[in-house]
Length: 198
Length: 93
Image (cartoon, rainbow over all chains, first blue to last red):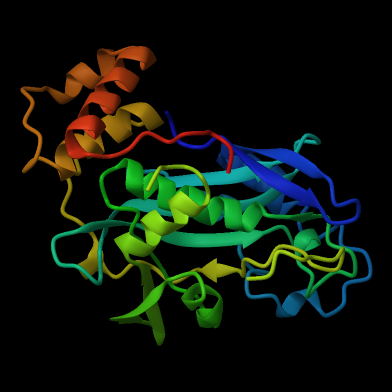
């Protein structure tokens, strides 16, 4: 079977489930679905949105810079109303930082829409989009024969990733430590999600 | 992690990244213009290029571009089977 194409999202207000689509994120999507909307429809934020790590990210510009790299990919989660609930950029040409001569998928950026963040809004809309994209990256890695290895820079969120099996590596860049999900933990994750058998 | 959520619980996945992949961790893959740009074509290409020590196939990159999607899927499936990569059981996460 091909890579997963949908994600089960939970409507935080009703507890009901809605299927989100995993879609390619184009530059136009990034402009209209993220840059022009994510930060303008926040009602009564619990803290200053300017303090969010990604407040200054311009997704369209990020995609523009990478459009000539064939190994660079971008995905988003769309709900039935066509709104973008989360976005991710990743690279398929990374090396593992834990195992010599092994490949990995590198998550360049990953963010959920500000309206889904419980630290930022009183009533988040959807739960599950960020996790969905993270698992998608692991599935992508597995499907390419990389064993599900994924590496990323957690940027002050090390604990979240350590709880999910990621390990710190010896690689540092700009004061940040690269974390990686080893193959055994990745396969365990895919198994727990019911994507593959043990 | 607890599965008991309240309506106050939003998405827990934090904002991640924004730091470039160090050049030393970038694989030396072909930079040429003949790399497929579509997802299926690129997947078949990557499977062949990164597992060349395990699967051998007489192949021209231009062949990939000429394939229809069903043929690409069949090729990907064959390579994955040879590599011991299991098929995904569902398409919903």
